Length: 536
Image (cartoon, one colour):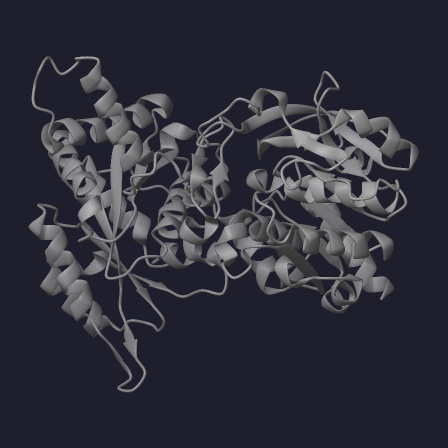
């Protein structure tokens, strides 16, 4: 029988529940258990696909085209497991399904209510995730903070679900904050007590607490929390701020978190094999080299907007024993080549990530041009590839004012244009070319040399594409078409062979990188940046 762990959060948002869930999953995977994860997000959006990154961080894309919460990226990276739309549930998707059922008459004329109809739909999503993978352990994270009105249906659903599963088949783990007051030098436990009281008022007594804290928590404080929150003393777990999120599994393991969970859920205790993860953390702490990578985008004031890009860079750094220093460049502020040059001084590599809309694009083009003309390793991702095509068309092929149809519908040279199957689409949500698609690589390309295979599959999220009318024109000027769809109709990767590393992909390789298995394009890019740092 599958065992269920429900993770809630209290006191404040952005506590790191997703990291705790992913770390716990990793620890059970290291014990040979089959683990799956699921994220519940209480917002009314059907998915985060139409939300600004400033609202919700990056949109993580799964193989099946699901646009999901960024925590699914953490789950995939820690568990080394591909997830799908069944693993991310929003209030919007739940309400949409219930309303559609009501319109079809499936409730047989009943008054549709929060209980039982909404809660039953939420529980059905848990059962669907269990049926799909049949895991030994399913970890379900409820987004938001206990006490939020929008999260109440999910809390009520897991209360009911726990009762239905019976004793020892499910448990509640509550992640909470212990604020530290610098003026008095004290950790305060009262917010945690109040948070647990709110959770208990909804009918859920947590079996375990994970305390997020800046400083170590002494035994007296833990005992006090256990007493006032009705939790066993050995089930009060500390989760201190760490230098790297990849340290968290080992930190939790050292406190015996998995043994406690096994006791609560009546699971066989097994010894973990964390040797490879321990080696990974050792490499993180002991880099032999150091490089500077610039990321030029329009959402640089919120790092979570490019979370998977940052993590993929670090993964390549772990593999090469290199510390990656990231320099954020707000592309809106780049007006000319002089500014680009100053911003890219002492930089060993440049990334232009994905994005939508015209704001900041001209600044990105200045950055791309400086990288190309000064042979700075460049990696373009989605919009970063389209910018590379536009810049090459303007400044190498002589197509003055070349542009994307997204930014200038009247330009004479639409080197990037709207995909044919996107032209009559009205709704923005879940209508892009999205999810995993195959790609065939040119054997003469750098991309082929790092992938070491001709056939690959990568995740997409875009509406615009390379305009094939300009394929021969740009190729004659030196642009290499390094990868296309198997039928040759869609350009997926372009390269500039004159540069040591100038590679740009229409897809998002960052979604498939793993901490102990970096994505080939990121690894090749970082190795090129290391070479440049040596030459400098």
